[in-house]
Length: 175
Ligand SMILES: [Zn+2]
Image (tube, rainbow, N blue to C red; front, side):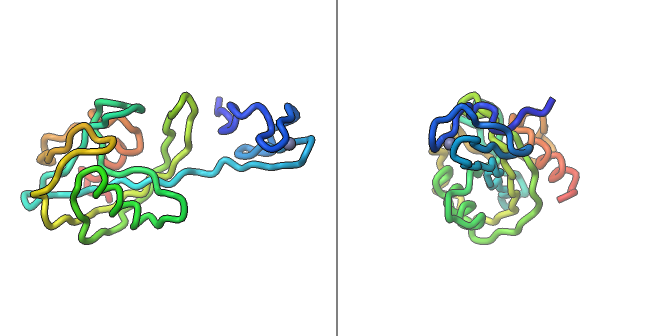
């Protein structure tokens, strides 16, 4: 059974009424004050970066969901930010390195459980180049970052479903 994305929201956030009912599959409406709220997807970016030898830059997640599993660098797009700006900001925040060029690859929907609530995301995957890795250091919500030759990567080691799908497509050269 598909759960309504706003099932945890039991009262109208404007007037507090409990007459807060399902309006359609992605919104709820207040029967008291007529406020309507839509649960739209949250945009996120995930980035493929390879070194001169062709090995892929992989991170280990510090935080839940899926703490301890492998991940691609990236994160949520901020309000009023472009996806390209999010790529540059996240890679610098997490790894201290600078993206010099990027190509959009594909997008993959995901369900991201945070604070015991399912957040519906759309992960935007980019292929990026970085000129200088000498100052690379894992920070922010990344526990560790390292390069893996493509023939040593196992998609099941990636804890987030969308990233696992992206890794499979990348290894199969489908993106
Ligand atoms: Zn209301």
